[in-house]
Amino acid sequence: MPFLTELKLRPSDGDKWRLLDHLVYETNDGDLVVVPPSFPTDLASIPRPLRLLYPVHGAHTRAAVIHDYLYHTKEIDDDPITRKEADQIFYEAMRWLGVRWSKAKTIYFAVRIGGWASW
Image (cartoon, rainbow, N blue to C red; front, side, top):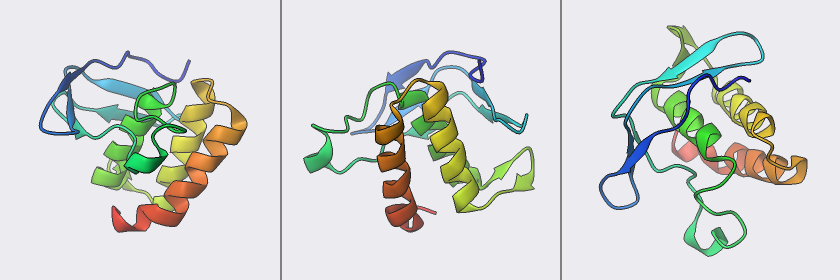
């Protein structure tokens, strides 16, 4: 399984959460993404009106934290990555977590369209 650790969070300010421990994900290419403890995340950045269809919490949550971290660092293991690569890893991680193909693709296209503002 590509996720080598479980997600442990605590609530923080507003819609933010903080990691209590490392979250480690191994990509399909064999790279390790290691999110450190205390990293702040909003989980999935889903606009409020869409949260009934796509909640912030769900099967995609661990993938969303990895995605937030990749957007924050713009690198894996000191190697720069593109926004598209970060979005593709998000999609890949969602699929590993069992998110339906159609839902994962919808979320992927949403971050491809709107993610530039956070990159």
